[in-house]
Length: 186
Image 1 (cartoon, rainbow, N blue to C red):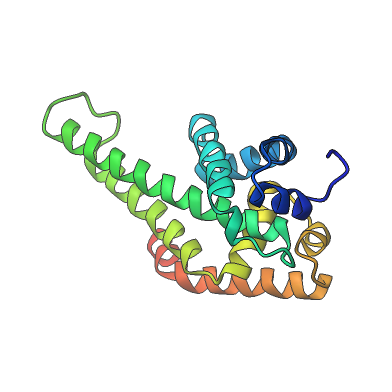
Image 2 (cartoon, rainbow, N blue to C red):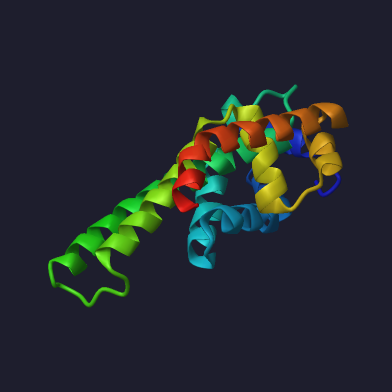
């Protein structure tokens, strides 16, 4: 099974092959961890995200189209899982901050500083989530996995010009979405 393509492994997973899933997980675990760590910015959350991504891949194997590109599909799954975890962590952080403000714990930063940082992070995450899936996949692969545009084009099975176009289009959108944040910091 080591020589089988990711797409073929997904077909076998649809048929109930645990060995195919184990092989796919082994192939992708390091990449998924790097992607999640880049997105979530800490190892513990990245480990949780990797596990969540693999669970989603297994549960949603039936949704994968045999004619599709597994790399692009798994990056969408990963991005969505990371965003869900980030939202949960953000909610947990707000609860902890509220507890600190109420004197239940010593605050490490003032509530005002924390609020500003949380708002900034939320704006960036919101901007990323607003990108079309194609652009989000390219940005995630570039930023969080460290792939070049040429490698991204190969992974998505598109011409280099298409990958470049999606990347620069995403940057323009992100700039527009984040303009209020950039003006605020100057």
